[in-house]
Image (cartoon, rainbow, N blue to C red; front, side):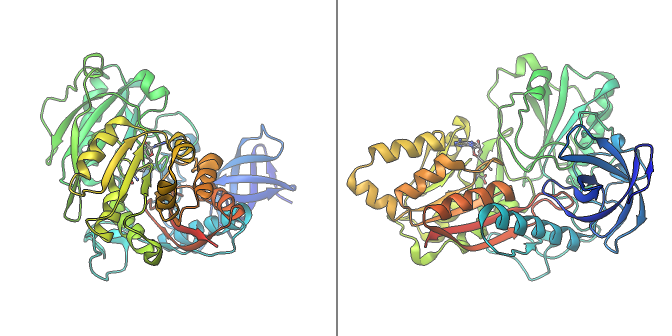
Length: 484
Ligand SMILES: C[S@@+](CC[C@H](N)C(=O)[O-])C[C@H]1O[C@@H](n2cnc3c(N)ncnc32)[C@H](O)[C@@H]1O
């Protein structure tokens, strides 16, 4: 029986839940506990008791520590601060990296079992500079550690910081809209951290009507800085995964803003950023990202994988996991939720210049860029459409010959966090496609979609999981679904 001291309770931590919190029980009720590790005993403050089915609590002191507890990777998110003053976005930063990956694998395994009906353990692999030093992959990710860089840090090439009272910038605290001013950003690239500190200084004097600031470092080392206007910040615009040190893994675009490049070495002395009302009308600037030998053009506020080695890792993953024996280059292959064509290019690279592949993406600017990025392949193209409507139209309108090409097709799908869902999975299975190479950033949404595929006669074939978001709870899974 836990000891009650006002709203403080001692809790034994049992396991980990989806969303980066640990699970304890208090008089039979589930309590989701932040900043704890399974196996620990902690003193926690109840933060939310509004629901009858579960409560939320924040660790304030560790009574019996796990052997996997380490000093927090981000001092400004550590236990010695009040919970509402801990920077959000590095919710696993107090756990050793190998244990973080085990916990992510636990969450994925549990989701696949409970929601997908699949009994499978998929270990979560370290990537890029955190991976064991076995050389360089086909698309050029760097394996092995970089001297002077703590493991699991300096990977974040997209960061959104919010502007709080007094013009001070920082991430939100976990599960709140309280801005926590910070003086370090250990998950961000060094260049973004340096730029953010300078911009923070400028905004303290004049917040320029903005509610948030976004930082992007391209693979060429250029840092772009954009202000996000008040109403755009409230509607949650901005590319996926930019919040704080590690907020969401990804999301939808939609932010118009104003920006400037800071160059490789920190930018100009003039810290005034362009005015939001004038710049909002402009088309967003184009940036270039490099993956191996390939260049991709995209809008600077457009979606791009967040970890500096993620684009290469996922390109390698879809190339190697796709069942080569089921791949037909002349079939109606697709890259659904294709962004600027990253994974379509990986497939065309793997299967040769005759490969037919169509990228389908709802964002018009991204599709325009995908068309350019895929121009060298005669069989590759890009379409602006919502995937659900596009597939429904295909079901209604495809000729007999097109249906045969769809049946033989490989569909790469890389949906947002909510997953593909019933309608899209229904269309894919009714079309009877040969295989689906599913890139998933949310284990529960993935597992639910796996269940839908299984109900329609598909099985989960090969699958791998990657630690694209070290020190956060996020994990990326790539799984292949084939007709059983
Ligand atoms: C996770 S990103 C993947 C992009 C690309 N595969 C990559 O790795 O760069 C998901 C993409 O799907 C797009 N998207 C979201 N919902 C969509 C929908 N219903 N139909 C088409 N595209 C959608 C987003 O704009 C975003 O570009």
